[in-house]
Image (tube, rainbow, N blue to C red):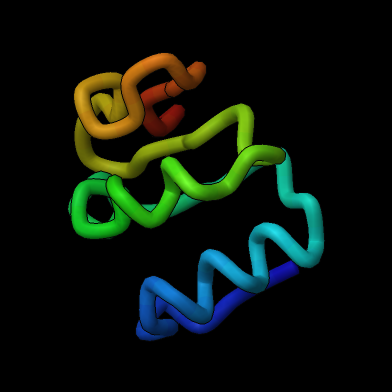
Length: 68
């Protein structure tokens, strides 16, 4: 599902949890801003970050740089 990139952190957490999303694709800067919120998403297992590695943003989660 696509979510508006301007969605506030609390609402995004609810959307991710309600949908049991396992993957999130987002710019690295957005992932960094959501770091604490994403820690509260137990179903999220994989993040694809655009721009730079997300491994420092989501410790303990599997992360992948963008493929371009």
